[in-house]
Length: 450
Image 1 (cartoon, rainbow, N blue to C red):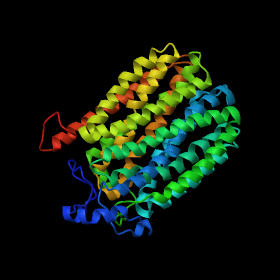
Image 2: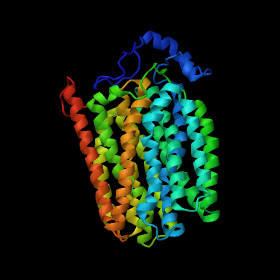
Image 3: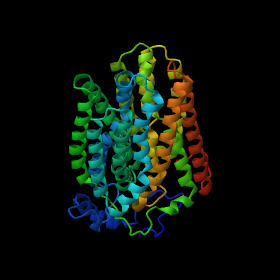
């Protein structure tokens, strides 16, 4: 049986209860095919990892990620529209509050919604998110002032997304062990797929029926699709009874703090390209459609990159893969964006940046699941994502100020440097995490799967 201690040793990589091979073989077929008909909190079965049934909740998460992250990944379309048409003369730093608050509340509130998911159930938590996200879109469609969009499209949607995100992030890692990286990558690829069609659909709707109806239609789609997908939010391991809302034992581990610091740094620097690539295209003589196309390329690259990152992580280690991707992100972002004099380099930038940079979104849950028990994953991921939310808020606001004050709406050099330096810092933190894991183990070789 699993240890009663919810926090694993740093070298423990399997978060499932120990079952005999005979027991697994005899129960695997029935357990994997047994659809959970009763309430998830009453489910007594601990299904074996890596069974085929695990792909059902994983694919449901992938679809929901389209709507959770699709809003933030495609916000560049709304940002370009607000900055250049609806609110001309409003500073970029003011308008950036809308997009940054989506990310801030989605991630920052998940330390509470994650605990709620572990305590009250995944589906109940997810359905609260569905209702709040739908309401946010509908209310935003009637907004006439920036502050109204901040409250609705920003804060309310971000809060609703947090209720959807908290259970979603913990489902794929708990259903898989051998293919944990792949499962997480497939699920998170949904965010990029959402960015693809969200971006194209949003741009088309704004051009043809206006931003107001675009928001209403997105709200209706969110309500219908996520409402259906929430039905398939099954947990593999039942939650343990708990007294505390937060999993405070996690804060006693250096691994937790290093992952949290890396998350803060990445979300501080990551969103610059998503929010400002459309405006960069406009500065180089492109159209609004060019900006939308660049976001499409960015999200298409992310679909490929996140799945490949999962496959590579299963073979070479999640920490090794993440460290390499963060360093490559800096190498790709700075020269291609700063030196761009036409649209062609921007397309190359978006394709490469999309493939390499967002791997942390799929690999951070894998790293956490390798070192913390399955039944508290939503809580622990929520606590690390609190730092992600703070990073998203700080980063997006500072980037808006830098663009207004130092780049003076004429270039993005200072904004790019700020973004790249935080990504580089995140890489250094992961290097420290790698050193910590190796130092705590019996195998001290530098080149090993970590």
